[in-house]
Length: 207
Image (cartoon, rainbow, N blue to C red; front, side, top):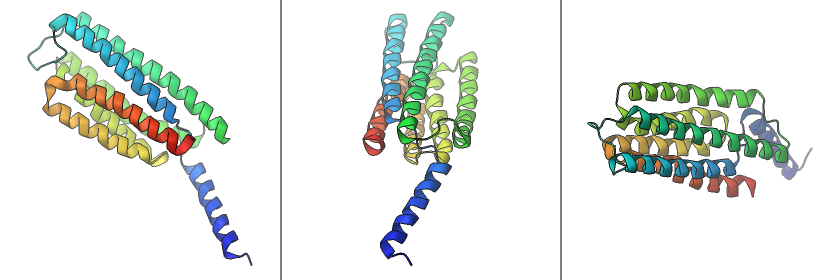
């Protein structure tokens, strides 16, 4: 019969193995930090574009935006997404190797499927908003759908992501009330919150 200390140690090891097999724990805090930096850079570009066009970065319901400006803003957003995804893949792969874990397995697939469905739905909804000239609602919608995606995916990865998702949804709802400050709320949600979350995750799980 094992002494109590050995039994507790074995139980702890079993729980650790179950956690590793059922949850994707290779997410890197550094990927969140860089995603936030890219988002702030993209927001700065959007601010300059809007400032040049209208003299202000605030958008309102009765404001018509030229197709050229919409195109530049979409390219700006696409650039942020590409850079964030690329660095996310790099740092997550590196973190997985350090922990001796697989980067691509059934758990990863479950995380991505739960993440991508709300994101794809939100992306299509935002394109519809742009087509219907409700551009002022795009920033709140991106925050809300992104938050829903994080909460949906948190079931299969680090539970801390759920709290980030709740914050993103809250910011999106607030941005829906203060429509003239969509870019500000977007910068806070995708920029500052990602940097804060990434920093916490880095020191909590990687240091």
